[in-house]
View 1 (cartoon, rainbow, N blue to C red):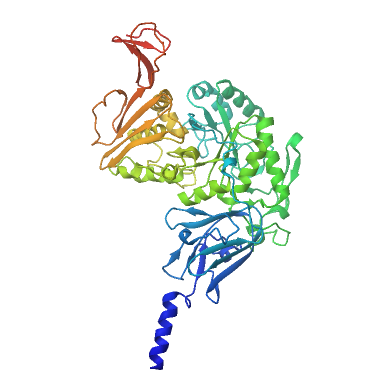
View 2: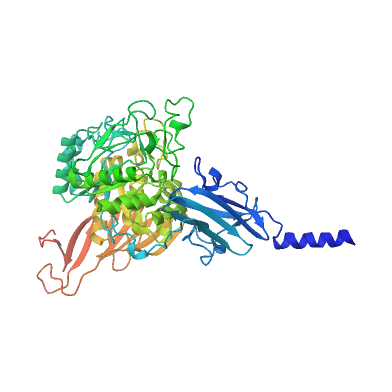
Length: 586
């Protein structure tokens, strides 16, 4: 009888969870006390049970973006559905939807305590932070309903390769008229001195690089500006390269009126290889705080919790805009530091446009944007890899409501088919849209179709230099269609359908609508009220353009109709066709 009673009591406690063990699993990283440095280990951080209240404290967690769930050590994951703001002093968001990860951002280093009583999860910080004010979101660097199209004007090692033309500053200057007549934004490679493509820079203020010198750079900027183009600088502030040893000889950055800055080991993150590798000559030197993001093993990671580093980055970004002449930024490897610092630097320098390279899944990019107070856009890597899954094949579900658009974040998405890091490279690394060695012209239909998709969709499309160089006529016509319809970063997508060998969607622009149909099984009939504006092997585009009642483009009684053909806008009246200036074409 006693054994039976004890068994019933044991079953009661197990069923109610009073004797269960709970853990916290999250996006820990080496050298950071958050989750004991462990990355999503289901039983990596045990909570302590005190009369049915489980809790755990992580001490001195640095500023950064964090995610977690409570687990039972095996298969049960308890997420945002159990989070309670009533017992928390840290603002948290649902990352991933449903019972998603609990995401939060820290502006300051502090102790983090997580507790769970079987019903609700509480999240407290020793400092805490204010709940974000949405009215302060997207204050800089993120234009609303933006119609612009971007060009990435380089690829890996393109300062020396000629397959798709080299892209040194002097070469780009020879293309300036052609680029300026097509694109609104031009993204240039890193401009500071450093090896090769420039992502391990030794001096931000020394503008002599593999691509050219300061004079050539500023001449190129002036040429592009003369066409109304805005130019983005590639900002590499996650890491820095020492000219002497691992961490013994950093060069001075002189930003003129914004000051000079000399990095030393004390401004390098504590977990950096300079202080952990047995072969390092700098292991005994002083160091900074824990990294607020992902470590880059190739170079020395800057400690952005340091006010001195923050001052240097603010001076650098201001100098690049106000002295050198750039208009905005593409930030490299932003997973390497908390998004709050990117927001801080943008608020200080006020770029016209900003885009962040947060190479990760949707939930991480969303968390990054939240941490940055949406004062930047982000490259839509999830959409890029859905395009890779499709590759011009038959499964068009890969294209339906994908990427940041699926989260309602089209305004903050820079869409792309390939970039310098995903394309085939001299080091053999590749995540390219299609594997084709060096001759992309053999894949013209698939590459043009993929570019057509991003150019007809919301977000800010970024065209890759080898694609533009190889298929200029196609891409220019597609851009003309986008602009004639007025498709913009926040355009609405209607009637989206996807099946085997078939995809269709209607996109609403400022000036009209476009219907994109793709796949061998697509409907090829012309929709009522639309004109066939672009025809290709894998897709068709049909457009209609709004005409206001009081618009008088051609002085005739009948109301004119706007028509787009091969990317060119015409006016049709009484069976005749005119240019938009009123010249008779036929």
